[in-house]
Length: 371
Image (cartoon, rainbow, N blue to C red; front, side):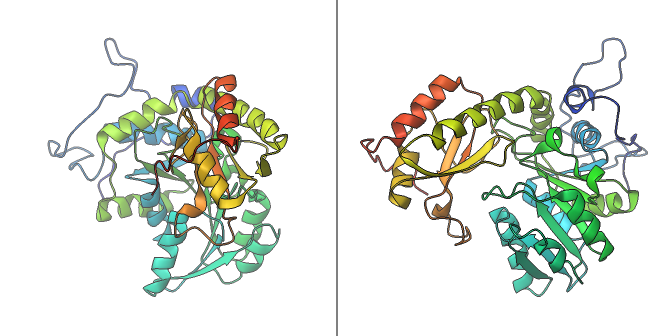
C-alpha cells in the first residue's frame, strides 16, 4: 500500500486555538513558503512515497496533519463530508447494524437507508432525548454513530458515557464532530474510535470548499480508511484542500465571534413575541427557532431577510438560515416550521436588525430562493 511516511499527529500541550494555526506547516527552511502550496499533480516521479495522484498529495497532507493534531489522531481527507461518512460506514461488516440518532444529518440517514435497502447493513434509529437509547440499541450492533449536537434538532449526547457503554458491547463508536469542532470537544479523548467532519462547514469556514475528513487513533483503522479513499476514488481536490487549510487557520476567531453572536441572538429570539420556540445547546454557532404562524410564517421569515442568506449549508462567515422541512428527506419528527440558523461573524446590531425585520409579520413574502 502506497502512503507517505508522515509523522503522527499526537495530542499536544498546545491549545486547540494554537494548533489550528501552527499544525500542518512546511519545514522552516530559508525561503520556504510559510504555507504548504497547491500541488496540482496527478502523477509523480516513481520511487517515492506518493507514486500516483490518487494515493496522496502534499496539499491534502497539510490539512490532515492539522486536523489530526486538533483531534488527537491521524486524519484522512475526502472529497466531502458524506464521502468521509461512506468510508467510515465501510468499517461495518456486511449485515451489521448501525445505531444512529433519528435526527442525524439528512445525508447520513440517506446513506444508511440506501445501504439498508440494498441489504448491505441494517439501521437502528433512536431518539437520543432518552439517555440510554443509543446504549440500549448498541447490543449486537457493529457501530454506534453519535452526533452531539444532532442536526438539526441540536440534541446533546454524553459522548464519554455512551462510548464506554457501546464499546463494552463490541460496537465501534463514531462521532460526527462537525457542529462542535475540536475547539469544544475531542471525541477520541472521550473514547470514540473515529471522528468525522464535514470540513465544508466550520473547519473550512468560508462556503467555498467541499471536503470531509475522518480521524482515528489507531493505525489499523487508519489503513482501512486510507485504502477506501484510494480504491473508491473519494479524493479531495487540491484547491479544496488548500482552501480548507487556509480556512482552518482562523477557526478559533471565527468560532468565538459566531458563537457570541449566536448566544446573543438566542436571547433576542426568546424575548420576541413573534417566536414560538428557540433551540440552542449552550455552545456552538447553530441554533433553531420556530416562528409563530407555522410553516407559512417560517417561509415568509426566511425569504424576507436582506442580510441573512436563505441557504442549506452552515459554518461559513455569513449567517444563513432555512426551513428544514423544505427538504423531502427531513424526518417528520422535525417541526414543520423549524428554522435552522447558522450564525456568522457579522456585526450583531446589523444581524439582529435584519432578523427582526424578517420576523415582522408585515414583511413581504417575496417567494425567493425556493428549492
